[in-house]
Image (cartoon, rainbow, N blue to C red; front, side, top):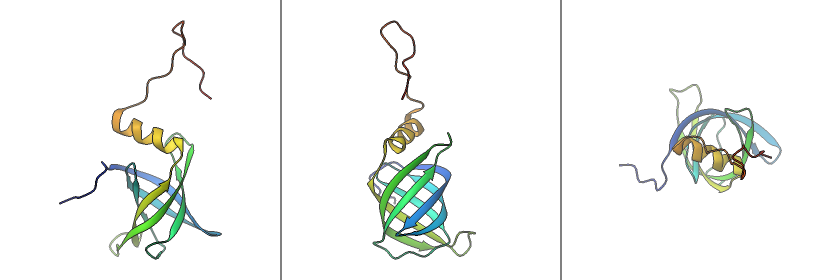
Amino acid sequence: MDQRKDHRISKQLYVQLRIEKRVFWGLLNDCSENGLFIKCNQDFPIGTVIDIEIFMPDKSTSVLKGIIRRKIDMPESNRKYGLGIELIKKDVRYTIFLASSLHGPMPQARTNDGSAAMQR
């Protein structure tokens, strides 16, 4: 039985992982409000604080910070390890991405005269 408190969304997006000055690549497998599951070829210890950059479908990037809470070996996969990451810092792009993935695109803001408001 799945005991996660947050609904997870299956997404396959490339991610860049940074620990200190080292950079690694991985593949986001699923995500939620407070966590990610990433497949990668690098073995990291549980408890490692990691900087994560997600390459979004709209070509933007989202920058997050997390702690590796769980690790599984995936020898049958082309990526050797699966990392369960608890998010400790999220940006607004990630929040919008999650909301639109769960509930569809957010409506565009309108001005008083009914025209679309400019987004910054």
